[in-house]
Image (cartoon, rainbow, N blue to C red; front, side):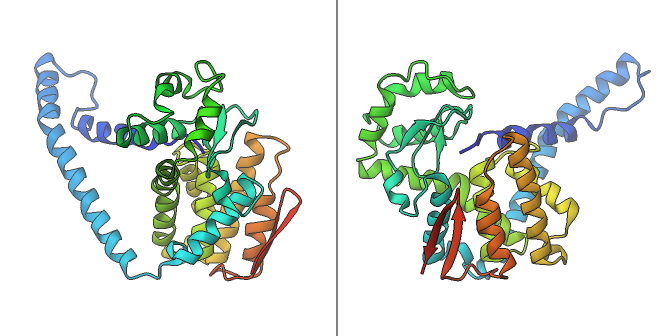
Length: 306
């Protein structure tokens, strides 16, 4: 639902910092010294990047090994289905999430058109990424002609080049099984899988994994203060994760507090019931495994999964 491209850009300064750390801090370097430092930095750059890449690959392999021996949690088929129902109750006011492939409207929130099962937006990159990946597999699809316009409006709330035909084209394409599958794959790639993976590494159970997933959907996989990763950093400053020896309930309480504050800061007066009368209700009941039956409320509507 939110901008998905920030993480790749955010990694660049980290690499650059490693490259330039070999330059002396003394501003009185001679030209020869400066030339030597520049040459050293140039020579070191590939090595630093390779070392960073190697460390990242080793860490990911270790993380994969750890996750492999953990319970499936939210990734279990029944829990994943439950997660989609919970998110859909907030995103589409129904637990029947498969009815939302063709939904598309401008909600007036500054994100342009919001569409599909997870609320892909024309203004926040994820809808563009979805259509680009879909078009790679099927160049003749009914949305491909709108790619130039989608690239132009990305990052804005503009409809230029999209009206009047894009909404009809989206609804028509949503009848195509391959596009429905593409929506699910992009949802999993951008939101579900990263959220569940990180929650498991933080030592969180099924409820915590859902808390991360819903936050990832609403706030986006961004590193900024209001993005998912920024919220996680703020929560970790207030309470330790279970992986660091903290209480799961206390950490999740801190995360939900931070998230609620971010929601209200972004949109004063926003209805925060997806946190207050859903996730926090499950947490207060001690339902860390997200066991059914579940009862919750969102925007004044009551839901129940037996």
